[in-house]
Amino acid sequence: MLKFIRAHKKILIDFIYSFVAYGLPTVVLQFVIQPLIAGRTTADANGLFVTLFNVVKLMAGVFIVPLANLRLLKKQECEKNIALNSFFNTLFIVAISCSAIIGTLMNGFYRNFKWTVTDIILLLLILLIMGVHDYFMIAFRLILNYKKIVIDNILIVSGYGIGLLLFIYTGLWELIFITGYLFGMIYVLFSTDLWKTRPGTKDGSHLVRQYGDLCASDLLKNATTYCDRLIIYPVLGGYDVSVYNSASVVSKAVTVISSPLRNVLLSYIVNSNELKVSRKKLKKYIPLAVLGIAVVFAVFWGVSILACKLLYPKYAASAMPFIPIITIAIVIETTGAILNIVLFRFAKTVVQTIISALKLGVYLVAVLLLAIVAKMGLLGFCIAILLADITFITAVLVGLSKNITLTE
Image (cartoon, rainbow, N blue to C red):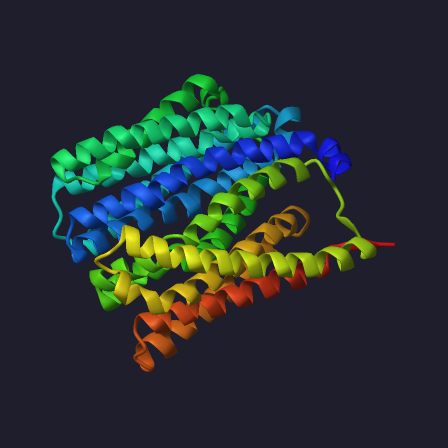
């Protein structure tokens, strides 16, 4: 064990930094901000908040994150050809514009187009500020400086604190995220140079197709991550969104571990050109991985029950039947997402689109049959998510089997 730690010291340290960086805002969001908003609003108003916040996360996941990951993957090319940095900044302008326009339209849809100028401006500010922050902070991962990522997220959490005070005073939940990400954006812009490169269109036409593939893939993939609430709200109403969000309070915290692990893994494997795995190690670690997944499920199931009762007392009784289904679904999805980072690096980008399409297809068909036709309501949505995640991890494993070189 000590030998392993010494051999992988740099990666382990970066994982710890990444864990702290991602964990801080996620824990504050899940265990402070969302319960506070739920306790101070009606079920329908809280359901609308959860839905619109997922609109924001969906826009970032579909337009900004794919571009940031592509910039990371093209690290070596950009170092050789500076013109590519200009092209990436042009793509960013397109991405942030699409995010703002589509996000604003969805804002109107969920408000039944009975919105005020304030409603439009506040959500638009979140989309713009978060978009700028989430893309240009990729500069820290390019140089593997996870200390700055930690500082960045500490500033975001500090901004959340100020935003919470503003929310308590005004009732506008948008101010929490505007203030939080404004702090982070200012730090990123002062600490990086990527944004200083003038946008251009030279030498980067080949990136458009790849970016398009990744956007399509992430749209399909994120559909079952964020769109559960986006579909539940118009179909079942704000109360069921609130119940679902309460039932998934701790399960979503699994991402506190998985997201930093995926970020560090991708940052390091971009320099590898081939995936080789020993048959002996594979046989040894598969049973351990299965056992680990079972333990994680049991722990998060138990903690979810306690946390739901403590943080969401208004919805706890209604949420209890859904907790085990949501918990196993998120554990399976998280495991698949970690494995998918490896597939993302070594397989063609179109593979991501195919896998995500399968996942979304299963989800939508299951929602239609279970939640709507069979009238199972929220239970139907939960089972549909579980079936989609099982499909996802199966497809990733099949993809990996075709891209791994097994050695003795």
